[in-house]
Amino acid sequence: MFSSSHTVRPSRREQRSSWQAPALLGFSALTGYVAAIVSTPLPQASLGGTAQVRAHEQNLTPVPVAAPLESLPPEAIGPLASELEAELFVVPEPDPSITSAPRALASEADAACPDGMVLVEGQYCPAVAQRCLDYLNVERDRCAEFAEGSRCVGTPVAMRFCVDQFEYPNTAGVKPEIAVTYLDAEAKCAEQGKRLCTAEEWTLACEGPERLPYPTGLRRDEQACNYDKPYRMPNNDAYANPRTRADEIKRLDQRVASGEMAECVSAYGVHDMTGNVDEWVYNKSGSARERPYTSGLKGGYWGPVRNRCRPMTVDHNEWHSGYQIGFRCCASGHDQSPAQGVAGESEEPRAEALLAEAEASG
Image (tube, rainbow, N blue to C red; front, side, top):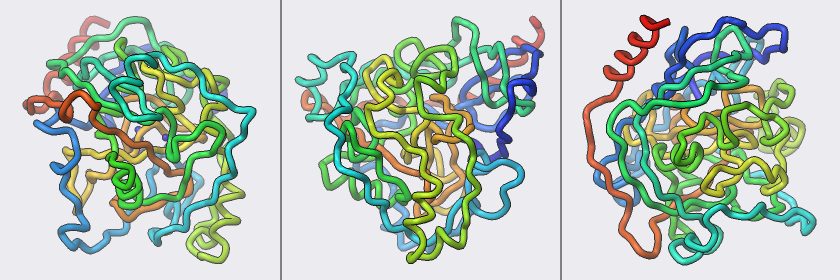
């Protein structure tokens, strides 16, 4: 499945920090008191579709970049995977014994959204202040539990859109596709008359109306969602070689089928938003030429990474593919035009002011 550029070392329980401090969720790489800070501003007049600027339409030259450091422990050296376009890993046929959990807004979504999609309607907040009670590692980017209550920084924006219930191919009982580039993901959504989700849409669908850090609530629960699996060191040469790539993906793969983790569902009824596979999203505040890129990754994957609703990795260009990367699609509902929002000034100064206030108050 929404990721930063610093290294995360899988931590043992005894490494937890007992020190408690306020964390500000939103903009991606603050440390100290900050759990995560969103790196995307308020939505523009249109949240996707034809308004998105595509790098391949500008005939840009691919720019190789390193893998998201968040996905690798300090022992890992080299890129997560080759920048060569990967062959898609063939997923098994649907398992009839695995069914989808009930959708939270099924009746309304059926009327407003295409088949297999759920309706998301709510207020997106540009930055959310929350406090972690129990950090899992010394970097303080993985949190076991957050305190109740949150505070929205900035002006909320009303949004209404449809999102795939599961990760692509959006089928219960089928493992999501991986080793997909941003451009491939974008094309596959377009084939279905859909588009990639914007970072804001993805975040709202994940955190729900209560703006929770995890789709399942305040606590990190590896029994509910597919994350915190043991890290397996990738063989970059094997992944880069078309003859050995499929076997290397098979060795690294720790996905589960869509719908298998029935409790890993957001308040809107969207499954597997954190963990399982990293998900491509459109980061409209990014650049097609340099970091931060327009091609963002949300949610983390099956490994021991942040796996929350707010963080986003923006270190990979549109030609990048990684063994753990997939996607899901979004669309406008049958009964409305694309979600609208008013662009505003950066919320970072206000977020920093809130952080200073929290520090002063202890």
